[in-house]
Amino acid sequence: MREQALQLLQWYDRHARSMPWRVPPEDRKNGVMPDPYGVWLSEVMLQQTTVAAVRDYWRKFTDIWPTVADLAAAEDAEVMAAWAGLGYYARARNLLKCARVVVTDHGGQFPRDHATLLTLPGIGPYTAAAVAAIAFDQPETVLDGNVERVMSRIHDVHTPLPAAKPELMALAQALTPVERPGDYAQAVMDLGATICTPKSPACGICPWRDPCRARMAGTAAELPQKTPKKKVPTRRGIAYVTRRADGAWLLETRPEKGLLGGMLGWPGSDWGDAPVADPPLDADWYRLDATARHTFTHFHLELTIMTARVPADAVADRGDFIPHGTFRPAALPTVMRKVYDLASGQLIID
Ligand code: SF4
Image 1 (cartoon, rainbow, N blue to C red):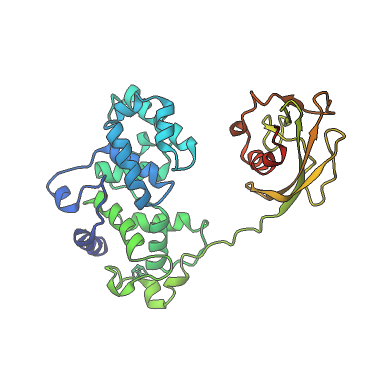
Image 2 (cartoon, rainbow, N blue to C red):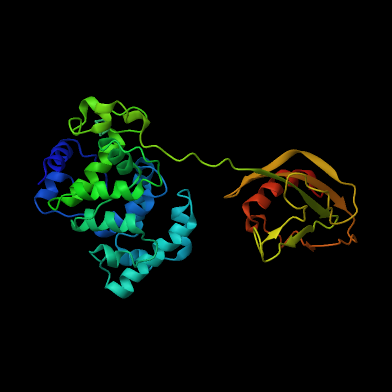
């Protein structure tokens, strides 16, 4: 084995972090391997949050659903409820889909190789490499944010991310050993998480301090370089929240094309630099002091909120009055829900 990989593995043998889904290096050397289901579950959860937060979620999931077959047989709603707090429900839906495909197409056994793992729902190149390496000791290279940082430093790479990814991947691959690749993958991650940290790398106790070029050049704290994020513009708009005397709310379905296409929302102006007033009906409009703020991928939105109470026989130029009993604020897209949360207190009907 190459000297550099060996140095890191020797460090890992002494300092491996303890994690409920991990088999410690001394046990792995005796042939104990982790449950691929547990490894996969931890990797999907770790895409969302930190190791500290994942521990409890991982324990909860494996208590309720100890095997991939148990998870595959679970009710969707139960899994969504257990996932609450971990963010992006799309990941939880893919988690469930993946468990079901493993059961139906792979006899309940996770595939061992990177290419087949990649065909499973919700598994991208990173997760496929992590599961193949950690659960099956395949010599796959795992490149997450921690590993990118470590690679950019030991090789003193100044190309900014994300353009540097292929270069960092090639450098990481060149270091990956064929012996103990699962421990090695976890060792590089641990090194990035505990020693080669973003702000103040502890070079003095690092197992790679001798070969590390950034340490020699004094550039470690500047790496990895990142392409500056483009400044996100701010657009402004007006949202009109109207409530009829019988409790109904005036909402409209947004046009199919465009942002929030086909979703329910408050009638409003266009979103731009200087929105033009465009109320959906004549009323005595009241402007709220609070503004609803939301960030989309390419812009920030600030919505001025106008509210009005109107008689039970009021007719709107656009949109439909939805009876209070059937109106579900939770079904609104987030920005429209924010408007509702700010406006509803002004429009309570006795
Ligand atoms: S020597 Fe310092 S910069 Fe280099 S890998 Fe170790 S902790 Fe990171």
